[in-house]
Image (cartoon, rainbow, N blue to C red; front, top):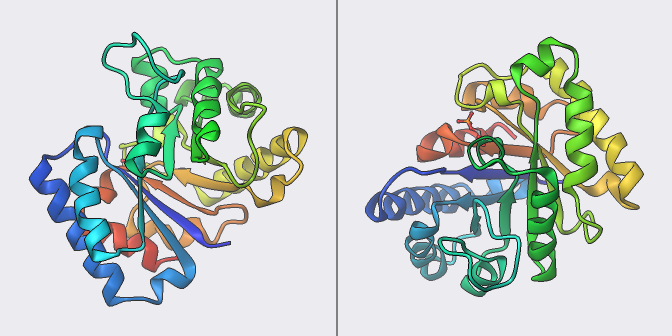
Length: 251
Ligand code: PGA
């Protein structure tokens, strides 16, 4: 399975920096075609910067997918400020991230809401990247598997298959802190996630499970060597082309 190198730009940058960053990434991938043998590339900019990314990717024919960082739980209607999966599909997105811990935390998103969003993504033939992960106090209390097991149990809609679903395990305490989980923590949790997926999906062995949380070029090789780590969801390091590409080079 190729590694999915997914950049989550979060709420950063401008139209101009989105364009430059995409150009730099596209040039780096074009200069090193061997990267494509081991990796699939995805960037998820803020909604307003998707058009700047697309305006680079399409004319350069860059082998880079782009996607949303979130979407609405329903098709259309009176939802001021929301963007639907249908709109993202119409725009050319292939992936949408849902259930990121920052959405669960700052927007009180529940796993049931995440499942409704993923269901809309699947209905449009796109791939949902469903994020799960425990908080520091939950791990401290030894509850990390309960938390992640519950999130997996409730965040996947009945439409989920290996083709349309990616899981991103992101321990909340590792996001943006520079403190990545250890390879052993990740091995144990990714195996657990694989087992939970077996209860829900027929083809669970083929679901990609990404790790996210302070992935950098210097720890990526060790993380990618862990069994059941099929890529990375990258925040901070995805905002610098050399770091993002450095992570892909580690695959
Ligand atoms: P980070 O963020 O790489 O900056 O830790 C990861 C994420 O939140 O997806």
